[in-house]
Length: 366
Image (cartoon, rainbow, N blue to C red; front, side, top):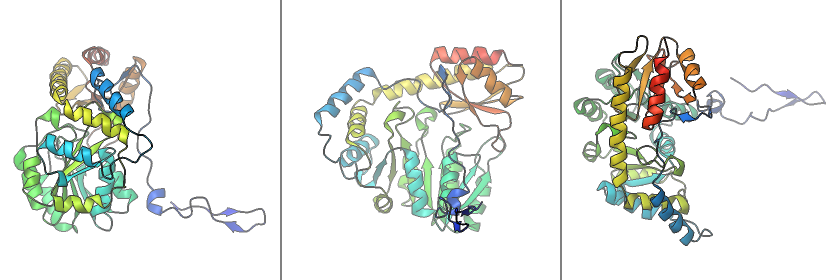
């Protein structure tokens, strides 16, 4: 795609408003999401529950006690230390940004520009979007038919392409599949000379934990978020756990004062009171199992097992199923345009009442 020059009133050629924009940016569509207002919102993999009211009150009190006219910590240093204590990690190996999406962009800048971004397909769209926007060479290896990691295919791609950044998501998005640890290790161990990112956004729901694998190699990094199990998507906070040598380089790309004082106060309160996260994650896992069981015998729709706080529902007609649910006040996410996901909708686990409504609405489909 190129910008078409404009003609001025005098007939001379004028540059278009986007003439100076890099072609890589012009050629990539915007992030593929259109907000839809619906009573039951099961489309963004958020927690169905708000931050606990008593903790929210503590956070507001702490915010009010802090000066708003002063810059926050240069690199969210207080929050780095609190995350390090919670994760049993060296604080020098923690990087904090407003959401893990920001870290994905920075990691692409760190190791992808002029190099390779390697991941699977289908996968989290931000990996591929940032690779395309930043002009990195994007290589995707199709998942196995059961959505498991294509171990040998990834090993071959690691050998065939110049090093860069490798994204391994556990459990995967958008499929919710969690791989055997041996398969994850096989891929990670083969990625010598690469920056290896194990994205663990949904690990509280799968019971997986790859911090140990990250500690075994200085080129490895765990990506985590407060947007899911913590119920703090509105606060926008993600973090990376890695070796101090790797985070020293990554931190160079993080803007100064990038976490505001108000968000930092809320997250400090959350980290001081993490007990609620475990209970909520357990409830999601229970509800996920109940939903999958309730839909298992549907005559035309097939729920696909998941280890995340969402699952895929394969339907004969994704467009018809999507609009049927929307007419009943339930919004889910279409995934049927992705490779291997024909007919699929992605359904987040909601409250028990919301899940009951979803089960009933799907039950009407034929």
